[in-house]
Image (cartoon, rainbow, N blue to C red; front, side, top):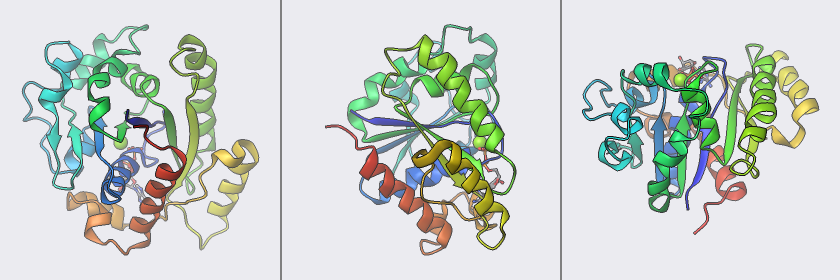
Amino acid sequence: MAYTISFSIYKGGTGKTTSAVHTAAALTDLGQRVLLVDLDQQASSTRYVGINPDEANPSFYHVFQNQVPASVIRKRTAFGFDIIPSSSLMAAIEEILEPGEERLLRAILQPLQEEYDYILIDTPPGKAGLAFNGIVAADMLLVPASAERMSIDGVSDLVNHVQDIFWHKFREELKHQEIRVLFTMYKASTTHSPGVVEAARRIYRENVLPIYIPETIEFSRSFDKRTPLTRLAPKHPGAQAYRQVAQWIIDHAPATT
Ligand SMILES: Nc1ncnc2c1ncn2[C@@H]1O[C@H](COP(=O)(O)OP(=O)(O)O)[C@@H](O)[C@H]1O
Ligand SMILES: [Mg+2]
């Protein structure tokens, strides 16, 4: 059975996509079988791995419409992991998802569980149906927070909403769900980033990952090159940090066989 991790926070631009893609690449490099699921209509993870989101037909839209199974639209990336690519039609899914339909993705991914060690979900920003589907499908929420921009409010918004709403509504499914905070865009050279992390540690304690992703322009460059930094510059501290995240996941959130 795969262990499913959703990169979730309602705030945009804190590193969900960058973290999902790099964690997928790094887990793969460590020998794990990985599926990346792109739920965002912006299709940033899909583009990151060099896939054109407008090409797929049938697409993720048809999977949500129950017309084809997810295995039909799944693709192998050049980086050794598989992806369920997003498509611009995901906007239509967002439109028609009703309250009470937060379990659809969970059901969609169920038949693929045996084929992977880890299923990673990149979610869209905002409090809406697809983001909720990502949350309800996950064994663990990894919440990317920017250590440079004030994102503690974004973390508590997500954590409170999940605990108050989803942990009650889906008590059975989510009774073992874990939440961890992953700091991104960390600048060790200023006092600001360490201060933000310290403030978060006072609230979330050991649920803040002891690994901080450094702030570096190399991540934007890697997106422009459609290649994860772990492949582009494996020795770069940014690549090493995501390798540590992958190792942390293997140690703390083992896939069950
Ligand atoms: N550690 C980092 N250092 C510097 N820039 C980063 C870092 N992580 C992500 N970025 C950049 O910040 C922007 C937003 O990141 P992204 O992963 O797309 O966030 P989200 O998916 O949460 O919207 C992108 O331009 C990305 O290249
Ligand atoms: Mg994104």
